[in-house]
Image (cartoon, rainbow over all chains, first blue to last red):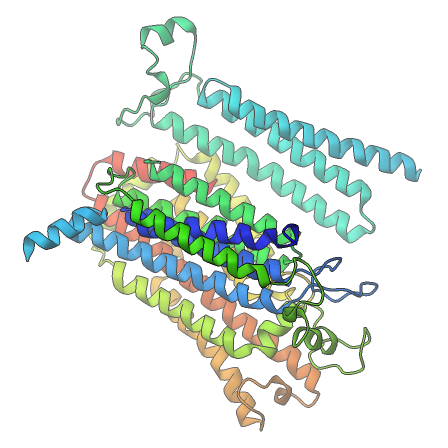
Length: 117
Length: 128
Length: 334
């Protein structure tokens, strides 16, 4: 039973890594990197759920009867592109924050905000 | 004839994997940036070429062979250009190659991390 | 790890590794997209951002013990939750039982079935474009919104005298980048050809609008990196790209409207021509084209704005500023 579920555990480990980076690191760029890792772990979850033992890629050809499930592939295709849209917007925001506050460390930004209040 | 083809294709694939492995060992073990670039540039390109030739020998019909030939041509164009880009960027930023023991002793091992900020069109240890 | 450059490089390697993982999971379309987007464009944008915000991270001030505790508890709960899930690769998992066999069986004639609804061998494209066309419409809108957002955040107004100065700098660099410029001039037509192949061959093999759009944009970005941003701006007009981004989404929406005008539902391609399967082919072709145009234009908008912002900051600086930008840009070219 344990060996059959190892793909979910890999996903959980990656997800927790990404989550830790988002909440514990102070640098904004590292937070965006953590978000990326989190997103990729979710993709791996769906794609590993789609795999059927002995199946092949879901492109219909003669002579193959067992295919992997194409539905999660479609969802993840959309998710990857949305992920890069989010990343690019996050990076643009980081650039503007750097210009406005002079730094991209969370602590220093909060210090500057507290001082100005 | 079939066994000759499959044996030679297996040989090409194994040779390609071995070349890739040596390229990887080269990255880890060579002392200087430029020597590492040389290891990777040469061995990775020839490794990928060998693997592609091995696949070409095994492919079932002409259209797959054509696609593999095109991939090989693209690879032969792009890999050396990329290695050149990396090495030139390093040279332009003042990363000096590790020449010999006397020079490294003189500079106290600062060779690897030299970063001076002046433009370096004139600096050429090997004329470009 | 304090060096953000190393972090970004590792992220690129991670993207490539996950793309190869997707290939081994038989998800070829997804692997294609992840390789081109995750290992290509994402690394490039992060490198551009690092040149603008600073390469090294400052030391953290607080200890992350609370974060570690939260992580461990959440991880344990998640692992407990996965104990009920179906085994890896089992064909009787609920995910593989309800809708997916219908897609696999009904899309193309002759294999297991008698119906033929879509007629496209690549089931992922068939599902993406026809069965789940609404989701793809939303996705095109999301990409467009991201492009508009980056435009709003990072666009700069360029003055003509800066352009002349930048041109002079770029011409003086010609000798330095000679080899790369010539090789790129030979290669860019082939990259375009490959992008067109991927776009229109998406029905029969892995590919489709997204991947093709990204490859198109990458070819133009390569040109812009090596020949200078102002030269690239003269070759590709900026307002044209912005209009094209909107045109792509418009094409997608208008296919839906034409279906309504022909008597079907929104985005029901069977209403597009007299033979429903030919209508499906036509509909899929046109919307993949629309998606490809939007993705290309938005990637170009994002890159040009990032690079333009960077150049705007350094234009009054010394030559070394441009040197470091070009060298980091050529590192990204690898």
